[in-house]
Length: 233
Ligand code: CA
Image (cartoon, rainbow, N blue to C red; front, side):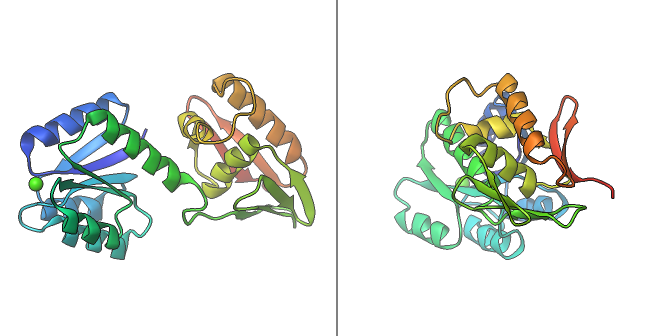
């Protein structure tokens, strides 16, 4: 689940988008012009934005540039007219993560949005790959390969273990939702077995063993997910 901002002046399309995204399990806020979008972005933390470029008051490109100056890592998907090639190029140059041309299929929007949110949660997109533990051993992860180090000691990890641990390291001290882990796993190479909630528990158990005596713990936050934290010395 993500908290999304939909910026679209066409009321019918805006309401349709909001309804679909809520149905897909997201929480959604909406704005009908660029100025309203800016004030919402100033007061609220969002996980992603769907931004129409043709907007009244403040246009979409101006909002996008404004977002990139303040919230560099916020994923933004732009909506452009079918013949708006220049808009599209301008939008991508201004830092949009993806675009869709109108009219579009709702299923495609959902799929692209999902992929965009997933990418933004990966450490390659600006997150940290190193955390300090209460012992002198820091936990470090390779940004590409399924490898980690506890202090000087190398840690062998499977792809799933590595992506789970990346998410936890990236969000140290915050809860990582089960559905976020499962979403990231969908993009990782298969390791056999369904990547369901039961599998998640198995992987958490394995990581706990590997982090034994490291000064770091994976806490189960009941009903929500998991959180990496430093033990109190
Ligand atoms: Ca419009």
